Length: 493
Image (cartoon, rainbow, N blue to C red; front, top):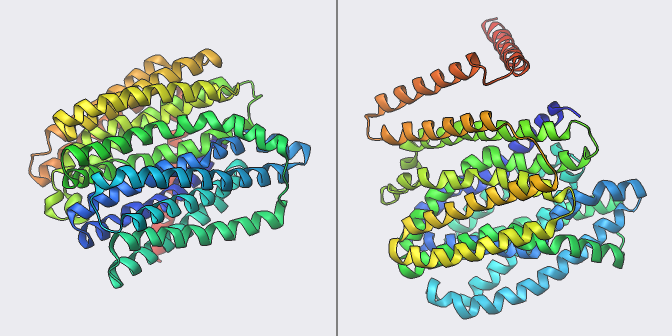
C-alpha cells in the first residue's frame, strides 16, 4: 500500500475535478455579463436547488458503489450491483422529482418571484435528475480507480456545457431557461454514452436482495450528503427573502470563487480517498496512512486558500462587473468553512469502514436542523454576515463530531502537533492577505509572495517534516528541475 498510488490518482482526479468544475467557474463571466445581478441571484438559488435534488435522487448510490464494488467483483456479480443501483437511481428520480415539484410550486414563488414558474421548476428537476444519473454512472470508474477514464468524461462534460450554455445564453438569448436546458442536454447525452459502454463491458442484472442492501446502506447518506447543501440552500433562500436577490448574487459569486480551493484540492482528495481506503482496508499501515494524509490535507489547504485570495484580489474584476466588487471581502470568511469538507470525508470514511452510515446521517442531519434554525435568526438580522456565521458553525461542528465518532469507531492516532502547526499556517496566510489587501498592487503581490516563500523555507528547514518527507520533496524538485533544464536546452537547439 503506497501513498504514491493515492497521489497519482488524486492528481488525475484533480485534473478531472478541475475540468468538471471549471465549467461552473468559466461560465461565471457569461452569467454575470449576460444576466442582471438579480437574475444571477435567482439562477444561484436554482443551481443550489439542483444540487439538493441531486443528493436526494442519488440515494447514497455513489458511496454504495465505492463500498461494495470490490466485494461484488470478487463474487462475479458486479452486473447485479450496477443494474440494481441503476433501478434505484431511476426510481428515486421519479419519487424525489415529484416531491420536489410540489414543494417548489408551493414555496418557490414567494422567493423567486418570476413568471413561468412551472417551466423553471420542471427544468430544474430535469437538470437534477439527468446530472444524478450521469454522475452515478461515472462513479463506476471511480470505484475501479479508472481515474483516466473519469477525467476524460469530466473534460467532455466541461466542453459541452460551455458550448451549449454559450449557444443558448449568448446566441439565442434564452437567459436562465437556456442555462438549465444546456445542463439537461449535456448530462443526458453523457449518461447514455456511459451507460451503453458499461453495459457492453459488465452487463446489467437485478437482484432484490442487492437493491435492498444498497437502499439500506445509502438511505442514511441522503442526510449525510445533503445536510450541508440543505443548510446552504435554505440560507440562500432566506437571504433572498429577507434581503434581496442582489445580495444572493454577491454571496454566490464569493462562494463560487472560494469553492476553487475545493475544486483544486478537496474534491480530488474526496474522489481518491474513499476508493483508496476501501480497496486497502486490510492493510497493516492503513491507520498511519490516514494520519499522514490528514496532516497533508490541512497544510495543502492553507496554501491553496492563500492562492485563491492572493490571485483574486484583482482578478475578480475580470470575472464580474464592478457591481460585484464587494464579493471579494466575503471570500476570506467562506474559505474556512469550505476547508472543513475534506475533514468531513476523513471522519465519514472512518465510520463507513465499519458500515456506520446511520451515524453519519444522524450527525449531519441533526447539525443541519440546528444550523437551519440558527440561519433563520442570523440572516434575518445580519444578512450576508448571518449566512456566513451559520455556514462556518455547521462545517466546523460537523468536522469535529465526525472525526471524533469516526476515531472511536476506527481509532487513528492523528499527528496533533503537526496539525496544529498546519492550522497556524492557514490562519497566518489568510490574515496576511486580508490585512494587506488595501496595499498598492505591486506591494500587495510582492509582500505576500515574499511571506509565503519564507514560510515554505521555514517548514523545509524545521523539524515539521520528517527526513523521509524532505527527501521525497527534494527528489521531486530535482526531477522537475532536470526536466526544465532539458526542455530549455532543447528549446535553444
